[in-house]
Length: 214
Image (cartoon, rainbow, N blue to C red; front, side):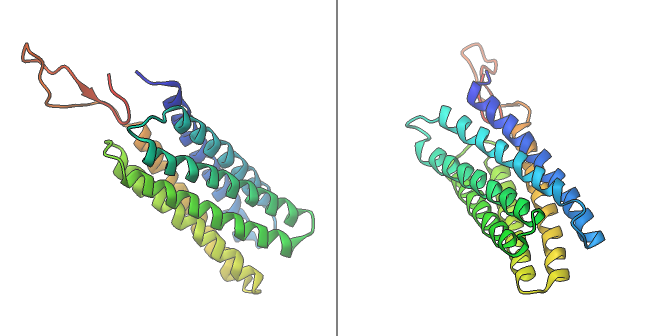
């Protein structure tokens, strides 16, 4: 049976996937045109990601119990860090669109770094669990962390007036995050896998799902 906390995790994962995709499309338009065209999509994408991260943090908090407290704490902390980072990204991009380009780019770089740290904490939390989806969560969050750090580096290049190179790194980082986010969606969408546990009548009496049991 899916709990309310797990519902929030799945919803958050989908929002994360949608947000990264919207942001990557916007970044692609911006990089190809060498203008601010598409930057509004990057802003919206980061906002959607922040909502998704927040839902996942709340969902993890609802699922917290003594048996998984350590790993879930890393997940919750990482989710909130990602939400803060994505919010900072949105603020930085809004500043850029308002004319404060340098300060906005600096804020965007810091936000991406915070987001990367959050995803890294989540990957570490997944490494402490023995759930079926843990390897997918490690891989997905690890890739999102790498993409976020790439975006931070891209903004640093731009601040150092290496704009073209910086934009290309931002493009790579944005699509890297899409890849990681959809691995997480796949993780939370895994179907049931029967376990070899037998009941007294010789029939399987237990089925293991991605992150819940029936």
